[in-house]
Image (cartoon, rainbow, N blue to C red; front, side, top):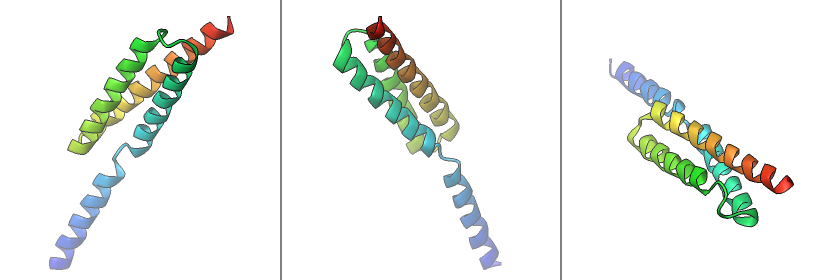
Length: 97
């Protein structure tokens, strides 16, 4: 009986850890850093609002991750990544013209 309880708790713990949005968080951090570098180097005032919003979303995702709210963290990390990519592409497109 005791082995069954330990096994069940271990399985729950592993399942809970496996669903953490680790990759999404990493992707969002990398996209945000890349956007900040491009914007700082080429046009600091362009797309700053989008980068700040992406940073806010990433902070929210990190907070949710610490609280175990993985679905919300995954959603906010994905939004942050997308905003950062769009901001970087917007700046790259403006500097190409």
